[in-house]
Length: 363
Image (tube, rainbow, N blue to C red; front, side):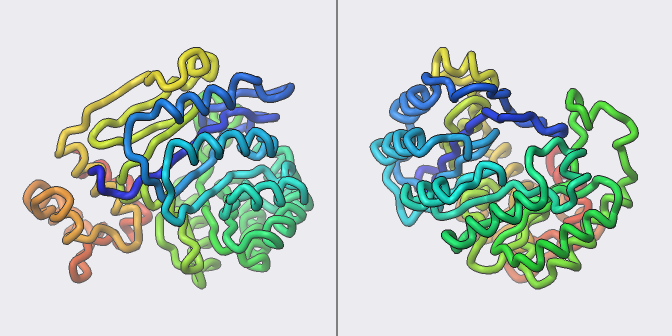
């Protein structure tokens, strides 16, 4: 696998406020960033044992937009000392209320070339329900600042909160703004979160599916290239495509995951534990060839273009039918996948019931 594309993910877990739905690794930050955090990241990067040539960097969180220009400068210097890059996509996730003209200029000057804005909604009651810090006006102002400097920018949206009219309003505003890339995520009710712990927040699957289909129709001018993602070519998220192709990636920071060769590893999720020994893995699993084949199938079948069968044969030395022929036949009979030339693709129903594809493949 060493010849495959390689991506780098940096997890910045700190947040000024914890969103009411968030199940990601995070830590409330009430003061300045811990002085030891960036040096610890740099040590973890320097000690990394693995590929050197990378095609993407993704700063996610948490809230990477909390980082100062100096923090980012030191971090990027560490990355460029350890890795070589080939025309990289360099992304940062930002909260709308962190976006200022000064920060936008800093991001641009440091070589960041893709900015993903966590808008979530243009409906203020929905934003309040989600526990977001910003309102619609702040989001619109942030978008204006970002798109004035960056050609490649993206928006994240969340659906699955009442009333349905709020989602319609958000989609209409989104279309007016014409972002190059849009991610739409159903609200996930995570146990232990303020939203997830209240039964009244649970809605019928058919109602949520209707909101998803509304987004499909509204965004029909975009390439719906992955279950939750829409893009205007060529503004696909190259880093996330590495995940969906089950390619190698290294994760740095608390809670980050890596796949290097056939080893899947996870960093400690607790920032305090991670800070005590950056680079120590909380878990390492040696994946078998079958494990990698299953993961590759599941991830590719999240994509509209599905799985290139020639690519699969080249990667694993045998056709997909050798290990999964009966399962694929069953999925075809159920109308969840279909063949198009040399590609195994999810059907539209397969997009809606994608979990069913994954469950069938892991049995």
